[in-house]
Length: 434
Image (cartoon, rainbow, N blue to C red; front, side):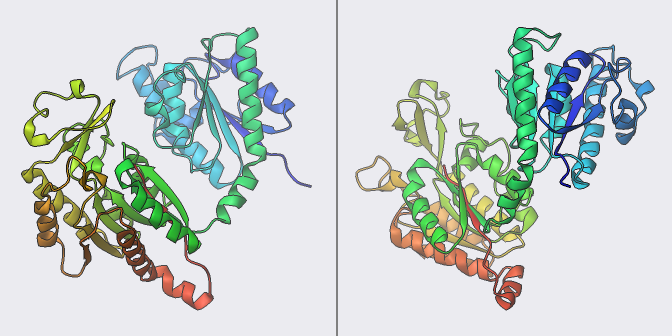
């Protein structure tokens, strides 16, 4: 007999026990089983959980009696939130590993959302995770991070049941139940997928990326593009999580945005994940010469100078040019990261233009970025294959050459010989786009 899907209901049963009891009943009415984990530290739970708060605390190496959670600040409430989140993360990891739960849901205000999200967002890509939160109508990035966690707006404070909160909580419970019931199908779809390749893309590198993407898909790869407007951080995260099988880092505008605090700052050092994981990669310094601010009147005065050759990309986005010193530093950075990457790797240089800004008739046509190319050549290890072509990055002939260069790296990865012997198809490649 096929067993029911199980939804894990996690949160503070002391302060929000009435609401959690209601969600539990809604889940049961949806035809799923429920496993309840208590994270409350202020008092006794409203009803008996399957895993109590003391167990959660112990997983984080602390006793409930150690909390002075009625005190605000680092030694009280903050410590309780941090440690109970840590303990909950370990508990959930174990439950997922043992296939005892198939979705997780929780409810929270500011503190509860911090506690729950710290544990939920680290669960694997594709595992259903949902928080009903008073913070869901605000900036959710601090809670969601780069995960696929869902947040539902609580609309009212989670403090008692009423006509509005009942509808919101019931819908969330039914959504969690549906995801839990469909989780096995979701996993089957993921397992049936081809290898995933990532490519980074900007608007001004789109034609080249799309050409590479079409060539990859024709070879049976799955391709994911990442918009290099800060989403490179998400790409780095997915590479670290093992979701991405290969990388064509075609657009590197986020480097200078990060250094100069532009609006497309990814908030992290780019190109590091490939160093940590060793996935096959080809690096093309597309759009690396620029960084961005909003409309012209938003550019900080120290950057709004003739040297920066400010280009109006559209009424709300401006592009600024790297200095010679920055071009040299960018070349050193790119070469260093490629050198340190342990997997198959190569570099492609489009000497005829790093993006559409260099096309004839465009404002940056004829701008000299040779210090970048010279710096990459000077710092790249001799063993790294370097492709140089007198083409713009968006020319089909260059994009085709990058595709061939990637396929060459793909064929030399450790798994390739085993696949050749067994006749299995290559894994899909993920591409990032701006």
